[in-house]
Amino acid sequence: MQRLCWIGVSVRRTWRAWLVTLALLVVAGSACATQTQPVHIGAGQSVVVLNGPWKFSTGDNIRWAGPDFDDSAWESVDLTAPPGAYDADVGLSDYVPGWGARGHPAYSGFGWYRLHVSVNAQDHRTLELLAPADVDDAYQVFFNDHLLAEAGDFAPVPPAVYSIQPRVIRLPPSLWWANGSDATGVIAFRVWMNASTARHDRSAGGLRVAPEIGTTDAVAARYRVQWMEAFWYDIVDALLATAFIVLAAMAFRLHVLNRADPLYSWLTVALALLSLSRANQAFFFWTQVESELQFAVSRSVLLDPMLLAAWTMTWRTAFGLHKGNRFPKLIGALTLAYMATSLFSRSFMQPMIPHPVVTDLKLAVTCLRWTMLLTNLYLVLRGARSRESWYVVPALLLVSIGLFARELNAMHIPGIWFPFGVGVSRTQFAFGAFDVAMFVLLLRRRSGLVRRDDRIRDEKPLGNGQPVARREPTSSTPK
Image (tube, rainbow, N blue to C red; front, side, top):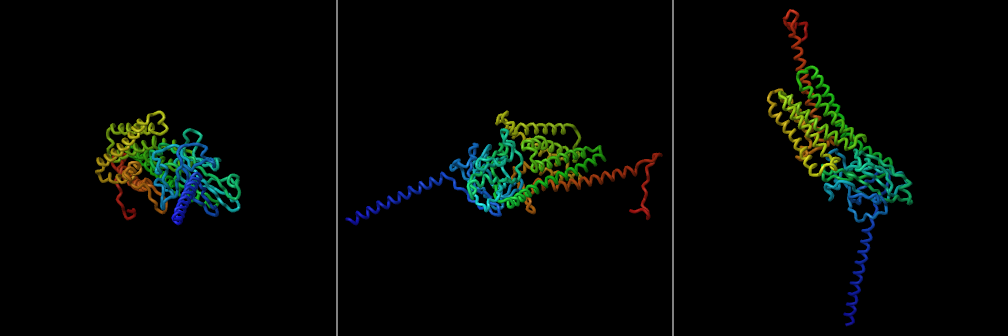
């Protein structure tokens, strides 16, 4: 009986011990949950990629930049890129999905990223932060409540967005080494994304490339790598713009030689507009002069409609279908409608226009673009009958790949490739091949005009009305 009582007491004590242990574990777990552990970083001669996990929240509150704010309830976001990940538009490496792919599809506005860090660096070396190479769409970066830098202009409401470029941000030693040998604190990114970006890509939003931290020399090396990626992509557009303006000069020369043919005047205008469009692309990404709003208006509202109209008129005259006045009036009406609907469907017009109307306007833009595409297809089917016209068809198809890139994207056709490790888009490949095809076509047309002028010169009558007799080659005349 005593043994049974002793066993019962032991069991009760064991259960009590287990309950006490379980309670301690719950309390400890709760304490850990309310306190975000810092990421420990050793900054030597290399950079450290700040993959996180970052704490993330939508919304906006400037208090979120402070080190004492409790972000334990925020979402955790890992910015580690999968192997071989890249941006499908520009080709930047180490690309990650935005907040739209992490549970916030189509969300636009402000979002905050916070990372608690503890950096140990020998001899209190100067540290630098390599800002993200791509962000949707603008950002401010803070350390312990101190604004270090910003990409974009946050003074107006909403913020003005400019192109995101690789950027090195110096971290003041007075901020980092205030607490002794270890630099501790919170790096915070306040990000703004426009509604137009969210509509264009539901997976967009926030940091798309992880920032990096390290010493001056190490960060400078990574900075050069990121700039070279961006430079080589945009240098293709700059080279294409140069090639297009050379072709426009050739077309204008043909217009001077044969003013009766409207083809060369339309071709000159179309090539000049295409050159301006590609040059503007490189100008926007290489400089901070043109805002995203100005770039969008110049491209979507002005250049894109005029490009489609100019090239449609060019192919019409190239296929010899330029008789009658109704077709130019129809293209002019479509172009003006495209400009108007594109302008009033922009995000900055939405406060004045109801959202359902904006949705209808965007649908109208899509319909107008498809109308232009089908019109070009109609011109090919009707005009590509003679042998000479088939020299025009390859050029038409190649330039259409670039002009109607939006429609090809909707068909899920791959948009970028990486020859020699450099990202080159489908549009750039098509325009490069188009340059070659158009150069051959213009040389062929120029040769034909030269032969025509020689024939007219040889047959020009003398003063007595008799044509000039052609001199037959002799042994002393080269054949």
